[in-house]
Image 1 (tube, one colour):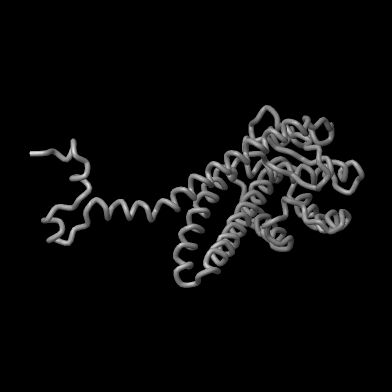
Image 2 (spheres, helix red, strand yellow):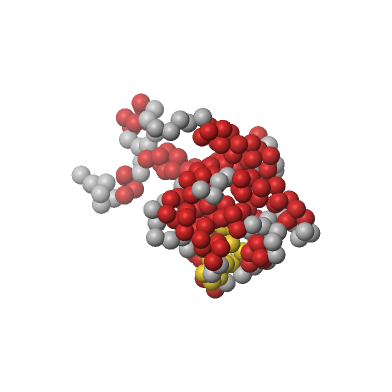
Amino acid sequence: MRSGFFFPQQAIRPSRAEIALGRPGPSAHIQVMLKFTPILLAILYAVAMYRFSAWRTARELDAKSTELADGRLKALTDRMAEALDLPRIRVNIYEIEPVNGLAAPDGRIFITRGFYNRYRAGEVTAEEMASVIAHELGHVALGHSQRRMIDFSGQNAIRTALAMVLSRFLPGIGPWIANALMKLLAARLSRGDEYEADAYAAALLHKSGIGVGPQKSLFTKLEKLTNNRGGAIPAWLLSHPKTEERIAALEALEARWANVQPR
């Protein structure tokens, strides 16, 4: 008797018993796998693109940044480092003009030259700059970079699946609707990250003795700082909560801490 091991054509054909019982043969399983192939490819593509983007960002930051050397800011970051039981907090200057602060995927903290120049000009106080650093530390401590990779991969897979389903009922506009829905989801997840980083920064500033006041006052200045640059929205405000909502959330935290009785 010929074995299917040596004759693969026998292995891919369903037996008569399988046909009689209505069971799918191996070819049906292959068809199911092929249906999921676009989703799997979308996940792999998203992971690859995220890793490439992180690598490219790290290279650019290496080429265009130096360590911040500012006595007033160092005194404040040293207080935060002590509160976190760290030897020090290293902050880097990213040599670009837009007003921005960012946390790199590798955990480094950056303030742009444009933001630092506003501080040097007296438009932003040292304590307000410290609140930006604390916010970016929150992104690092809470693992938001790693979460974004997972979110981005999942969103890409969902976008592909939705586009496949919607295209059957809405040919031509199905992929557009799927893309729009994923943008809304991404914005909501990003706002959640910002609230978490704000809360982390507030707790750190409170513990360091700097207070939450500078964090709130900086929020009120952001629109003015932006308008002075022609109305362009800084990158760290994209998909962020409204200023009033962020301040309200901080005030709720302050009220909660005020009601905590010391032991």
